[in-house]
Amino acid sequence: MVQPGEVREGMTVRTADGHRLGVVAGVGDVHFELEPGLVPVPRRDYLVEYSDVAAVSGHDVFLAPGAQLALEEDDDGGALPPRSHDDMDREP
Image (cartoon, rainbow, N blue to C red):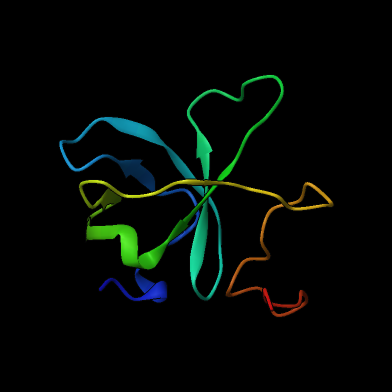
């Protein structure tokens, strides 16, 4: 399994066969937030658990075949706080 520290904001998220899905918008302890390519209206972000990541290579995150993307249900609509930011609380 990929460790949370291997995934960083701004990395490109790809399917197992290399198709681009979007970018990492925020990282947490058990999942990261995937923001699709161009910002659609209304904006929809997805949460991806690290267990659904097959590999991290360079600036790319490759999802495992059959990875499940959960539509984010965050009440405030904000991204997860960055793991490395000292002035913000980490995700619970």
